[in-house]
Image (cartoon, rainbow, N blue to C red; front, top):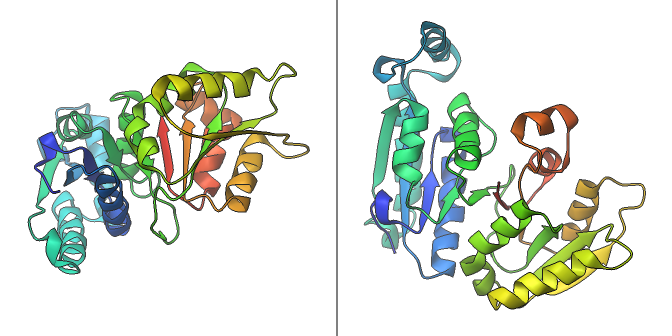
Length: 275
C-alpha cells in the first residue's frame, strides 16, 4: 500500500516533529480504508534555499532559536518516522521524502497528486503555513489529526456538518471514496430552514453520488453552530468529522471566530475539510 509521494492516494505531510506520528497513524488508516497507497514527506522552510524578501529570510532565521535549524527539524521528523515505521513490519517499504526551501513550492511539489493530505493544523510555523497552503493555494482535501490521542477506527462513523454551500458540496465530493468506505455516515443540518432545504439538498447530493447516509436536523439553541456540531458528534460516537472549510476565507474567519476556527480548536477527533 506504500508508494512514492507523487503517486500516492494519501500523503502524510510531516512539517512538525511533535505531530509526525499521529499524522502517520491517521494516513495509514485512511489509505487502508480505500485500499489505496500511502506516502510520507517532510516539508520545511529553509532560508538558505529560499528566494524571498530579506524580512522573510530574517524571520525564518529567528525560528532557529526556538525550533532548531531546518536540518535539526528534519532530523527530529526522521527520528519520529523511523520509530513509527519500526513498530510494524509491513511498513518496511515506506520511505520518507523531504523538501526544504520555499515552503509553498515544497507543498505544491509533494501534495499535487494526492487525493487526501493528512497534515496538522497547529504546531510550529511550518505546520501552520503548510496547512494554509493546502487549503487555500492547493485546494486539497485535508485531514487534520486530533490534538489529543487518536483512537483509530477512522471511518467507523463519519459525521458531516452540512449547509447547502459550494464549499460543503466540494468537501463531500472530494471525500467520496472515504465516505463510501465508512461504516456509517450521518449528515447533520444545524438550524435548517422551515422548508427543510438543508436536508433536501443533502439527500439530493448523496443520492447523486450513490452514497448512503442518515440526514438529521438539529437546533443549536443557545449554542453556536460549531458547538452544536461537536455536541452531536460526541453523542453519536463519531470517529471523524467532515466540513466545508472557511466559507468566508481564512483571515476573515480568524477575525470573526467562526465555525471552522472553532472546530479546529476544539474537535477531539480527526477533522476532514476542503475549502
